[in-house]
Length: 328
Image (cartoon, rainbow, N blue to C red; front, top):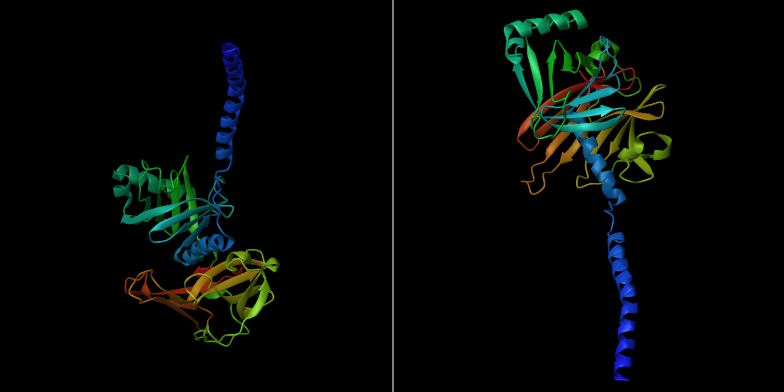
């Protein structure tokens, strides 16, 4: 009887082993399936977007030039500042990174007077430029080996005679918006309703705002801090262009205003023009921006303590007939 009982027990254990094994596998699968996805709250997403917007006023925009024969890069836009670059295709960022700029000559850049003279002649012939011997090179700070930043063909470029060039199966030419827009002195947008000169500081604690649904304007949601409508101060509203001042106070800086240019119910350009920005854990001396508009409708944006380094900066802008805010 004792042997029979032992045999029955062994059979039961054998029957239970597959069940235990399946259960163990199931538990492991369940653990893998329940790993939580990373979640970014909506307001935090907008905060990240806003950081990109805030930096846009530091960039000079370069667009595909009309003197190109090769059309491969016609949808590319280059945003270049003193120390960084963003490459966009159809308004989508395809790469970004830090850059270094250096003044040089054709002979120094191409390591040979003969090669340099040959490239200059090629540019004169292909792009109808003077090709003066003053180059400004733009190079990826991290180099090619690191695979960081913008890689070939955007890792090494140069500017000559107001045109930016990079090489891939031949040279490709880009021109800044200032040149693209024609003569800024005579062909830019002129205010007709706003009393000029304009020089006011916004009292953000007591100013009265108009309101607008983000659904009505394409691109406006990027400035809404996740809300369904924005508050704004109307600056000028003509048949073609609507200019407004919009507070970006959803972050840690309660006093920051952007100038938005709206054409055909689409935000076509923006510029940070007024406010204070405090450095985290800094000495409480803010970077301060203010603006004025002269009688010729030229904006002057003055920044003190630029990048918290104690330097002051003054830049002038105009608005093109198409509503783009460009350097003057």
